[in-house]
Amino acid sequence: MINKINEIKKFLGSIYLEREHIIHGLLTAFVARQHVLLVGPPGTAKSALVADLAKCITGTNYFQWLLTRFSTPEELFGPVSLKGLEQDTYKRNTHGKLPEAHIGFVDEIFKANSAILNALLTLANERLFYNNGGIVQSPLFSLVGASNEWPEEGEGLEALFDRFLFRYEVGNIADGNNFILMLQSNVPPQRPTISLEELEQLQMQAEMMTTVHLDVLEALLVIRDDLKVEGVRPSDRRFRQCLSLLKAAAVLDGRDFVKRKDLAILSDVLWVTPEKNEREIVRRVVTDLALDPVEKELAQIMDVTNELMVELGAALPEIKNSQGADAAQKALEYNTKLKGLKEQVALLPDRDDIKESKQNILQKIDDSMKLVKTAMLAV
Image 1: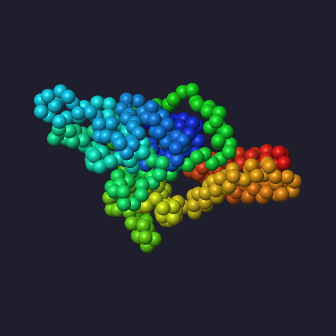
Image 2 (image 1 turned 90 degrees about the vertical axis):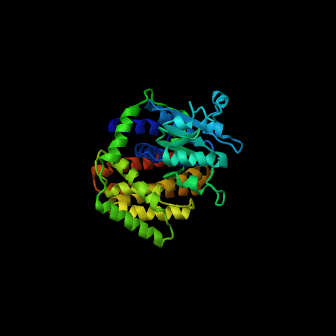
Image 3 (image 1 turned 90 degrees about the horizontal axis):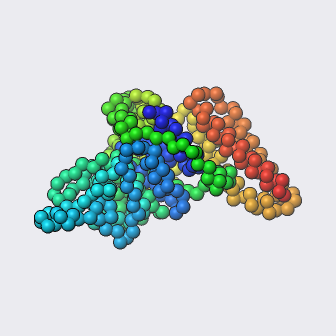
């Protein structure tokens, strides 16, 4: 089953470039039965990615809807049954709606009004839907919310925002080479799948048969205390829910126990407000506890590489349009920086657990160097 998950990751990663981190988070959330929030501008493939992932899990009910400020509860939870009204009962027909879905995607979720919000909170938190005074158990294991912007304070959306354990910022493609690949749209012919029954086995394995040892719990305590010093205070409930993500991460790595390195996924979980400074604080604190020195260095090189790719993407048109020595000098500076990063990666030890990450970084560096070379030839 893990091989099937890895095939799905590879398949989606080849279509949705620079989204590997989010794809891994979505699959981890599905195994952990937790919710995910995607925030980014229109056109960044938020809904398409989730819909494609849902198609990879056969046997699931998938529900997708776009909210507006004028949306009504009927759109998410179903219309009132006319037959029920004839019998003096107020009951919704939930067939094909969110209460009967395994995976739900609600776009512009922060436009939910109070009439929708209360039912949505109960459904997300307890997987329960109240219908005609009765309680209906929902099969929902993950609600994915999407928005073009973070919620503003004072809008009464704090409770809904807190229901999403994973929260990702989704941007446009940064690397020029990936942008070209995206335009070419080379979709693999065969879609890998995993059945709902197999996914439920992984969910049970994570919940019932995966151990969190004391050293990991103590590391969580250190993270909590370090964040408190920095003024970041995730709730006890959020820390408690983190355990499900850690167990899911272990299962997806083929283990029945959690390692300290699994804590790295909490970088996208433990911040309270979406301010960039707070997110950076959480990332630094979590990384310091989760990674060994070699992994930390590799993560730093990846950060510098990504930042340089963004900077290079903005500078390439200027280099191509410049003349003479100035353009050549700028191109040479970027080439020197990229070579330096490549040398840093080469100095890292040959370890199986970081082999794939090293290859990914080297590939990004080589692609960027080719773009620089092309720009230099155009001068």
